[in-house]
Each structure stands twice: as C-alpha cells, then as structure tokens.
Length: 354
Ligand code: SF4
Image 1 (cartoon, rainbow, N blue to C red):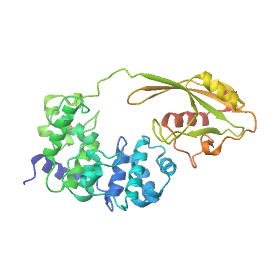
Image 2 (image 1 turned 60 degrees about the vertical axis):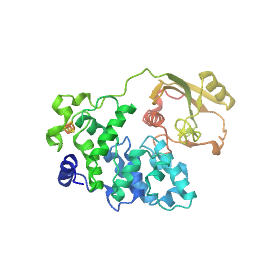
Image 3 (image 1 turned 45 degrees about the vertical axis):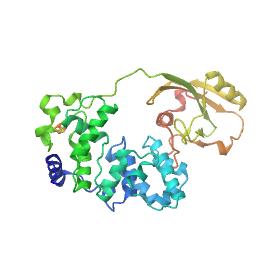
Image 4 (image 1 turned 90 degrees about the horizontal axis):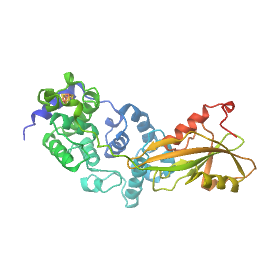
C-alpha cells in the first residue's frame, strides 16, 4: 500500500526535525518503551528523562521491577506525581512475573489486559519497539488530529473519541510505523502545542482544517465543566522534639493508595480526641489546602501538634520524617509534599508550633 500523504509529510519532517536521542529511543525494548510511555502520561519529556534513567538503573528489566517492594518503587517515583501509574506498573510486573514471564508480552491483547495499559499505550509499545502497525491516540495526538481534521467536541466523549481513532487509524502507515508514531508524538509536543502552535513549522499545515477555518483555539474542546462535590478532612501535623513529622502509609487502594501521608480524621473533634489519646498537645490550625481530583474537591485542614511524652509510635504503622530532608524522602501526595516543603522553610518564630 502506498504511504499516505499525511504520513509522508510527517515522516519527512521527522527525518529533519524529530527527536532521536531520547533515552528510551536507545536500546529499545518493549519494557523500556512501556516504562517511558507510562512516565510520559501527563508529564513532559524534560521532567521524565532523569526519572527514567534512575528507574532503569534500578530496574533494568521486568524481573527486577517485579522483585522490588512497592514503597521502594513509589519512592523512586516521588516528585513525578500520579502515583497510580507507578502502582499499576509494579502490579503488572508482579502479575507477569508470577505467571513465569521474564519479558513484557508482545501481543496487543495481552498488553491491554495488564493494569495501567490502555489501547494507546499498548499500541505505542508495539509500534515503537517492534514497528508493528498500531495507531496511537495519546493527548498530544488527539490535539493534532482534532485540529487537523477539524473534529469538534471533547475527546472524552465516545463519539468524538471514535472519530479521532478513525483518523488515527487512517493516517498510520504500513511502513516506518515506529518513526511515524514518534513523529506524531513530537509534532504534538514540539509544534502543535495547546496554547501556541507553530503552524509555520508544521508539515501538515496546508490542509489543517482548524488553521484554514480559524478554529485552532477551539480545538480540541475542553472537558465540559461541572461543579465538583467537596469533601473535607483534618490532617495531623504531629511533630516530635527533633522537628520530625509522623507519616502513615495509606491503604493500597483508594486515593493516594500506598503513599505516605499525614494521619487523617473526618472532623476536627476526632483529630483532637486522637491527640488526647496519645498525649499530644495540639497547636495551630493552618490554612486549609484544596486539592482537585477528577470527581471531587478535597479540602484538607492541617492542625499542628507536639508529642510531649516519650511515647513511641508503632514503627510498622508509619515513619518519622524531617521535612526538607531530601535523602530517603518518602513517596508523598503532592499537596502534602508542598505543605511539608513549606514547613521546612518556616522558622519557629513564625509560630507554627504550639
Ligand atoms: S497547522 Fe497548526 S494547528 Fe494545524 S496541525 Fe499543524 S500546528 Fe497544529
């Protein structure tokens, strides 16, 4: 089948201007592509590179990842955010290892059955590592195709997603699939950016419907806004006499599953009762923090407290962490990490402790 005109222009551009020296483009294996694709979800290339290199140094293959303890994997992920990605990566490796596998499967359906691997990620793994013809549709590609094909509507709606997948399938060539897949990703990241696309440098500008119709700023459409329900809770900033803060490991499922966080209570009264039970003296109530999840807003009210006795917390339930210490920093939810970083920069005279 002759290569289509869209793919041809894109491949020419990629040969001239595409990225070819990213760490996951060297020594390409399905495992390396998988890890990079998962890290790149919602995260930019420049941020991912050092994380990818550290991850590969520690877990060069599936067996090493499957043998690792989850907290260790999460702590290597600390700062990259969206920890569900790391939990799924680890769970998939453990499942595969338990079934006797030492490599990532190379069948599309088997990949799709693994935790955290959707249609586009499975396609990217096989296209980039094996040159198999599979269309991808990650966030960058959705933007390019919505604009180039003039596809209106929010890509999260199934009718819109179907049109985008159809376009992705149509444009994916039979040959040079790995280069084409990388080229689509690069075009979305380097040229067809959300706020300032560089259409003058775009190889497919001549028939881009959004450009011709003046609709670039409207495509792809944003998710329709609905007011999110709000939940609230109180979190305890319990300090010992060395300025360390008590963190507890959250249950493996649910929000921030498996991460370390501050002890959480449904009400301020429950928090105070817990402090009383452990002979801790409560101090200030700090300004509330708001964190937005996909389906709700969480309002966290931090309350400081100090342990006044030599009470020893149960080490199997948590750990003491000195805010600001970079070494062995545990995996923390982003808003808690920001709160602790802020505390580390606060001097005692600013009155945060009782
Ligand atoms: S012409 Fe502009 S809007 Fe259209 S695909 Fe290229 S960069 Fe994106």
